[in-house]
Amino acid sequence: MDTAAIAEIKTMKIANEYVLGICAGVGVLYGVKEDWDNVKRFIINNDFKKNLENFDPMSVSDKTWKYVRKKYLDLEWFNPQAIQSKTYAGVFLAEFLINMEI
Image (cartoon, rainbow, N blue to C red; front, side):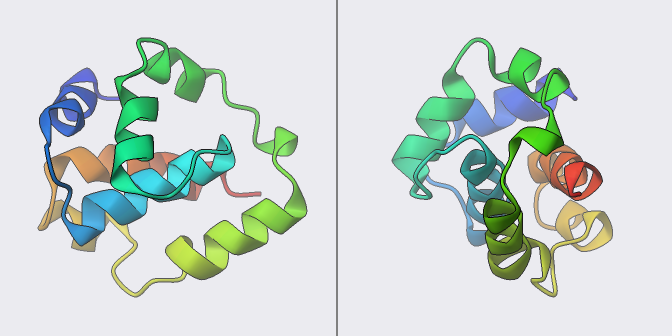
């Protein structure tokens, strides 16, 4: 996980649809509400990077994974190549979410 990408997200006052979608998708896995204020609060947490590194995808219910797939991962733009042109910070979290999917 790129520390600079996390730092960039932490400084955003308002997230564009790509950053919000990516961060909200990750947040859902941790039970975070999908609005920017809650997602940003979750990311600002000092243990955010550690939480990602220690994430166990098997700890997330099938119902939650299905929701994340339908609402986020299935979006046409939800792939690292498309995201990279919109947000540097989001690429790393998008890759995390894609790679953690079970």
